[in-house]
Length: 312
Image (tube, rainbow, N blue to C red):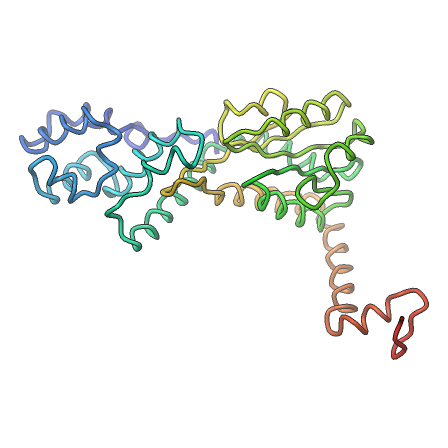
């Protein structure tokens, strides 16, 4: 949570760690440290073996240096370097040269994805503004107004999952994504009791900003889930939460976004637990009526239909 503090050792960058440990380094380690300092973060985009060969030392010297600097592994230092390189690059095309290595094995792709997602989850959890989270959960649990969920482009699967599960917890959830009513049509009837929950993950689109502004003008409340405090939705939101999206590939990772949405659904279900239990029991009954035999189930449930008599 936000009130938990990382130690200086954990939060320091490579350059800060090199400066702190300079007096403890051997001659070979110091020569490697000097080279890293001149070409950071790009120097770490190569494997430990390639980095050692480039600077006339051994892979074991590279591994020892990073262990001495406090990294759990060389891969952990690479993750930090990739994040530094890609943080300023808004598109997958721009990030590709820094994240796709010609010498990376397919097993390394698995390990790198796990490492990045573990870090994304931990960083999102550690930085979570719990006061904002609780305020958002209470807004989402309040059934007095409608809840609109807007997620475009790569965020759409997260938004669809969130809308689907919130609909099991409370009434009047409306998705403004693909296949749903357009935002323009929905805004015809926006009321001050309504809430817009929208996502903004780079590369930022103008549509969510325009829609959020329109909701605010009608007195409705806006919740934003973003990847950066600089996201253009932040100034328009009443509450916002941040997620980490770093990845070992050119594409943003949405693992932490799903985690955060999962936590929000859990919180809303907790706040509305008697109603959620009843709603899910009704849902089970509906499934029982239709799931075993879809044709017969629909026939039994249709007005004027009787079991065993087909409808034309």
